Length: 309
Ligand code: ATP
Image 1 (cartoon, rainbow, N blue to C red):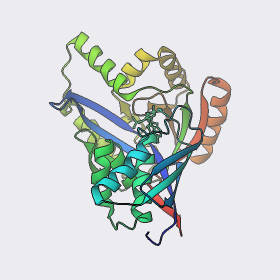
Image 2 (cartoon, rainbow, N blue to C red):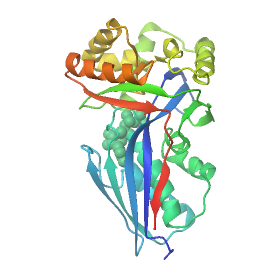
Image 3 (spheres, rainbow, N blue to C red):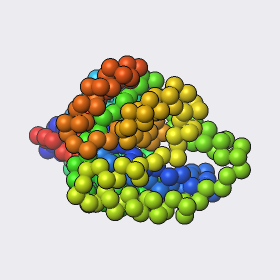
Image 4 (tube, protein in one colour):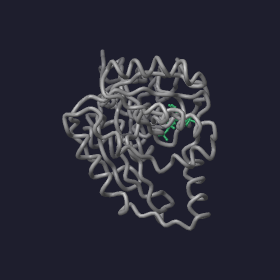
């Protein structure tokens, strides 16, 4: 047994200030030009050492619909470390969920990132962040970013990351919905829509806008980048969930800058300062009763150690 008995990690959810989808690659994934921002909405991952090699998990908080079996991404993360490094110890994971499930906020990936970090500590494997990010990429395209945190742009299927030094804080209001969307289904719908129209999508066409966004995100201004927020999945998300298109329109009519995060259905609204964001949140509670309204600020830290003993 290692000396460590208990490790507590916080893992942040993300939104995507922009998400451009290019062509389908030979491996079946889409080429992406994608921006990530960690928000201060955290899942808590607690890991307790157990004798023997068993990996178990308890989910608490708003974890409806998340499996507690071997398909849970945190369990897969712990198992991956065990297999790769011949670990004979086990772990009892407890996850307190605050990141909306299947909401386009990388909740599962955050838990995987948190479990990698926690078990690395618990089992005293001594892996650095780069090594954990490489392992994370085997679990899901968003996992490396969940370890890195803050603000980043990625290409490939989302795993070739580079950090952006944030210029300022961003004040977001989130609209979350009880029923999630499946990421593969949203991409499938996008493919169908594009095929119908015979459009060929090159990331070259959006490169300039994305470059401008990257530059603006690094400047000391908290909302100058608003006009460059974009998500190529929006149309597919609205095709699968028509009421979301109507809500997006309602928000635009209010003069607010909004995006769908990832494969939705979470909508993120950017405000120019803290007070405005709070006022927007209060207003939306009245005007969009079908959503749950949350305030969040970014960029926040990625998965990080809180406590160990
Ligand atoms: P992304 O934005 O990365 O596509 P998402 O935020 O839309 O993901 P998740 O919350 O990661 O979606 O959940 C996607 C699916 O993954 C869920 O339907 C859930 O059953 C499964 N899953 C497995 N493990 C977890 C976990 N620890 N937390 C949340 N979901 C998990």
